[in-house]
Length: 258
Length: 282
Image (cartoon, rainbow over all chains, first blue to last red; front, top):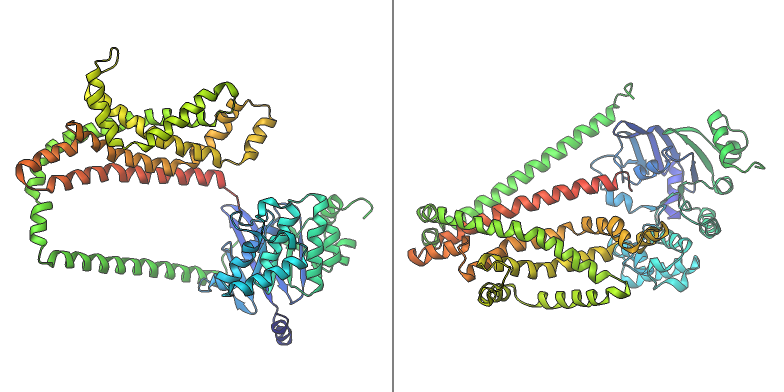
């Protein structure tokens, strides 16, 4: 992963390039000319109120939704082309959902080895070794053989992260992965994401955790009504936002002291 | 929103998607035609075909046997239409009795379990023979004594045991959190069942229920074994005199024509319910 990333950087192409993407559900316009460029090792945080289009953007990037206009490029190749093999693209992108979406009928280990074995052609021992390593790194070594429903929310979400990481994706999409968790469990999940960021994982995450975004993001995008209203390094967005609406939003979500 | 015009790239993509769609329609058409023409040709040119056609697909025999079969089929339809609502009611009652947790309802629960275990185990045709020939012989007071009534009862008894288990599976598939929220709102156990659990359970078991009902339409043919003049009996009657099996094919078509629209209709209802409930869900 790091090797190919270095080549990319040398070539100067962004890992992911989003150009004027538009998406509507019926009459409701959810994404309106969204453009975004993601370099390898970037951690992009999408912030904004619910319904601002954060999740839809992530789902469009993973080709789970068909866009109405615009272009999405991965490594310079257009993946919004109808001729592109969507499964191949998704094999390079990992996604974690707000509601974990683990498979309840499979054990933690089987959840994590399913895609590596069936999609990426790893043998069972290889896949299991990789999964066990990652599970151990993230403090889940005692839960390998349990079924997801026996775990706490925080543990389930960590498993979901491991499941996404087991395929060694070039890009990780995290869709409000702490929104369904108790406040005390949020920390354990964010610690992992912070680790990943430090290790140079390229990530785009929709989040409501502002202090976390300020800490790990290389770039923060504020979405409002389907548009990226403003984008910049966290220090800039959180301290001196340009737009009035960004300021209003931050006033509502940040503690008064911040 | 009205100001937006698709970009050239988007128009290009739409054209491409359209081309891909047309291509798959073309492939589907060509593949289907080639397949069915080949199979049809192989069938018709095979050496035994004239005999097969004369024995099973004779137009004259189909015409001659049609009126009797049609009249007989009305009996199957009547049986089905009467049996279906009865089965639904009895089966739901059985499933609920089996799920009852109140101490004083224990005898009911035991009875339900015994009933389901017993009648699911007995072949339906045995029940038909037993009830339709046996019960009228008892000369019971206050109940109809006809063959038709007892054949109907046999079907209801047998199928309600099956369908009760379908309902039970549905009830048990509803997540316990639903019962917990009903409890938390102060609903009684019966109210929770009536307003929360059963409505969800029923929706979930529509496909297996339909499966059982298609099975039931076909099993109405079992009454031909007690000499009720249904479609099958009429066909057998004709075949016995004319040594031609076309009437059986005609009866088959009657049953298929009855069940296929049922299946499509339920699919449609199911899809509509799903769209409504999962609207906006990820």
